[in-house]
Image (tube, rainbow, N blue to C red; front, side):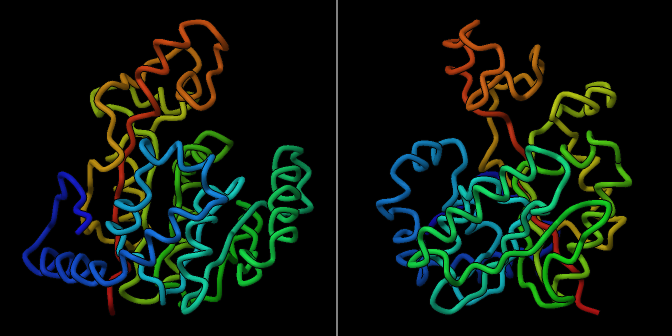
Length: 278
C-alpha cells in the first residue's frame, strides 16, 4: 500500500474515508504503476523523486474510473500518467491555456500540448481539452461532473499575476462548481513558511499554506487532510530568483548550481479539500 507521510485528518469519519480509499488503491496500484512506467515517461520519470506522483495521486484518492480535471497541465507531465490511468474507464479533462491567448507563452504552450496530443493518438485520443483562462474563461468541465480537480504548482501564478487572493478564490470557486458533491480538490504548491512576511508571496512563487486553506474555505471547500509527501525541509524558500532558482529552472544559470541541485525541487504543500455533500 502506498501510504502518504504525515497525514493530518480532521475527524474519525475522515480517517475512515481515507482508509477506504487506501484499501481501494491496493487493487488499482497495478494499473497506476503501469501508467507510471510507460516507456515514453523515461525522461519525465527522473522527476518522480521530487513530485511523488504515485503517492500524490493515491493521497488525493484518484481512481481509474473517475472523471478528473487537471488545471494547466503545461507540457503534460501529469497528463502522461493520468491519460493512461483513466483511459479505459475514466475521463480526463486537460484544462489548458486559451489557444487564442495574446500571451505568447500561453499560446506556445497550448500549441505544443495540442501537437503532442495529435502526434500520439494511441495515448491521448481520449483526452478532453478545455480552457482555463482567468478571469475570462472558467468552464473547465460540465458543472457538477468531476470527481477530482487537480492543480499542481499553479495557485501562486494566479496570485502573482494581477489577482492576489481574489484571483485564486475565483479559480477555486470554478473548481467547486465543476465538482460533484463529495468531490475532491487536490492542491500542490510551493510553500512559504508561516512566519515569513506575506509580501513575499508577491513575486517569489511561494505561498503560505494558511492562505491557500483560507481561500479554499471561502470557496466552500472543507480541508480533509494535508500531507508531507512533497515536503522538502532543505528548501528555505528564500532564494534570489524565488522558487525558480531551484531545479528544474535554475534561473541563476551555473551560479551555485551544485548547491541548488543538492537542495532539489521546492518544499511543497499537498492539500486535499472536499466539496461537502449537501
